[in-house]
Structures are given as C-alpha cells and as structure tokens.
Length: 221
Image (cartoon, rainbow, N blue to C red; front, side, top):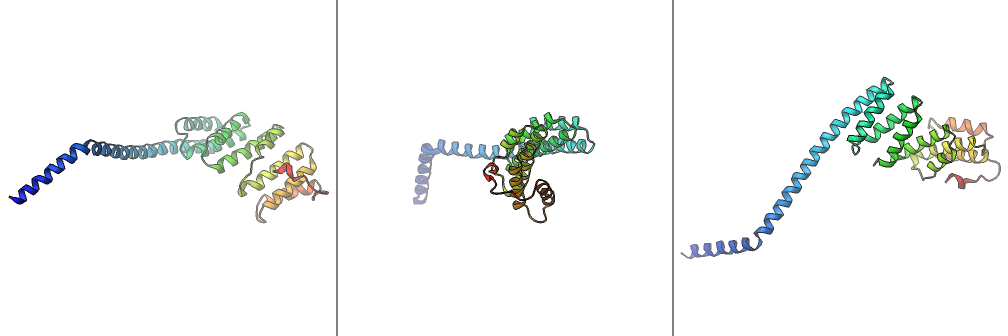
C-alpha cells in the first residue's frame, strides 16, 4: 500500500503542476510546431519559386540566343514581377539589359540596370549595373550622370573597369589631364594578364602617355 500511496502522491503532484502550467506548455508547443510548419512551408515555397523562376530564366536565355529582344523583355518582366527575390531576378535583369542595348533600346536597358541597382541583394551585380549605366550615359553624352555613377568606391574586381570608364568620360569632355590620370589609375589596378590592360594602355598612349606634372587624382575618388 505504501507504493500505491506514493504513486498517488506523484499523480496528484503532476495534476497540480499541469493545472498551473499546462496552458503555458500547450501554447509553447503550438508556437514551436507552428514555427516548424511555417519554416517547412517557406522552404517549400522557396523551392517552388526558384523552380518557376528558373523556367522563366531558361526561356529568357533561349530568346537571347535567338536575338528576340521583345521576348527577352517580356520574360524578364514576368520574372521580376513574380519572383523578384530569387537569385534569377538580377541575372535576368542584367541579361535583359544587354539584350536591349544590343537592340539599341537604351530606355529598356537602363530600366533593367536600375532595377538591379535598386533591388539586387548581391553587391557585385549592383556594381556591374552601375558601370553599365555609366557606359550608357557616356553614349548619351550625359557625362555628369556617368561620373556620378562612378563616384562610389568599387571593389578590386571592378575598380580598374570603373577608372577606365572614367577616363573615357573625361576624354569625351575634353579633360585630357583627368583622362590620363584615370587611365593610369586603371593600369595600376589591372594585372599584367588582364585582357583590358592593353586597350587601356593604347588609350593612354593616344592622349600623350604620362601625365605632365601632378595629376589631379581627387576627381577619381
């Protein structure tokens, strides 16, 4: 009987504990299970989003190969509207920007590049989009706009390209000393085997090579 009494006391203790804390435990379990369910649903949603986005991206790539800019822009528009947070979105916008540029549709090209600058979560894509926008600004003789896009500090993999483009803009403005300084800066950031190094050197040589006196490097930063 002593064992039965002890067992009864434990049962009474458990009942008392559950009466006091049972609701709290239940709610904690509900929260935990709900969080797990939400996490599982989110992963499933993400996989579905990525799959559908990849299908649109494949369609875009096929249209790019076929040089059908209209289809490229439509596919990109659908992808950006429906799946803007997927990894495919900025890649699609960059591809669409090039397709539009090749088709001489500068308005669409700029629209796609600005989307990348404003929405991409990958900094490398943003830097590349800014450089391409600056290149279009040079084509359109919007020199101040082009330079403003290149005033940010670019990471090492883009620094030489940005400096070289600054040189092109300065040259177009007739600012030869600044162009020389920009080309020299680009060369200093390019490795010897960089395929763009020879072109930068040719442009520097064409405007007189080394800068006479002290170059105003402030405009390059």
